[in-house]
Length: 414
Figure: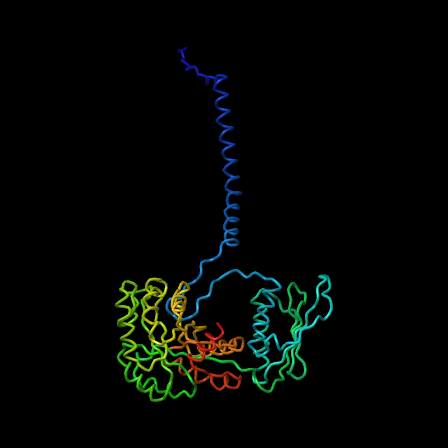
């Protein structure tokens, strides 16, 4: 029988005691690392998300800056709802519809159930010239914008009176009664400044010149049509100010125009350009800035500008094309009558948007004894929108005045 050879299988050598310990340690470390990784992933993500939330709660957003659109910049901030902020918004809105706080009837109307505080009833009369729907909308919008809640609204007396229940969390804290019963509206003063005149020919500006209300014409001194527009305005006895071009942040991509005030100009040249502008428009009674978001934030430039303007006899209106402007401050230091604009009606070049903006700013004029200084531009849509809303504004008791009258009133107040 043939001999068969069988290869003897070699068994695996059992690991030593030390080897087993090393393997166990490595395996345990791997498991522990995996657990730690999972915990960090879960809780680390939550911490990061919470940090973002906390940063939103605690950090104040940077103020926005207008890029030479002549709209008054507003600092954005989170709504902080308090009883004071709600009342402030409410009384401001009531003043806009012609019911200022001094004319309101305010009384305690019992206790607020569950809060132990007084329910305050506020009653105000406003003009029949203002639609009830608009008054209702303004009051409710103001309260809600301040962080409050409208609990209920009841109309009675055939639309002549509404009762708004305002509060928060379903609880009424203010009962606002609006009565549409005044025969004569509460007047408000508006100064309408039209900028950029001189950049378009006289034929395009004729509708504005013949608009039939007092306004202040702001003419750019070194434009192609400056002279013909200026002569026409002088002939119509319309108040004129100089629309002085100044350097914007976007220069040279954004061009302010010929002989503008730049931050790198020496004081002597700043003075020379101001004097040339005045010589071109000798009937001007004041000046405001065209663009200038860079120039008006440079203190050295504004110091030179203020000193050049000091002996001119002109007043100055800061167009506030930057939240960081120091123009009004520097000019005021030299004793020059000065103020700043309160709003712009044509940030958006759309007829409907301009009309709405004009109406909103006109209502705000009823809040201020010194009136509102509003800016528009020499554009076709702006002129059309102004003509459309004029009958309504006159019905509301809005009075149009010149910039010099507003400046005089504000200077006297100061």
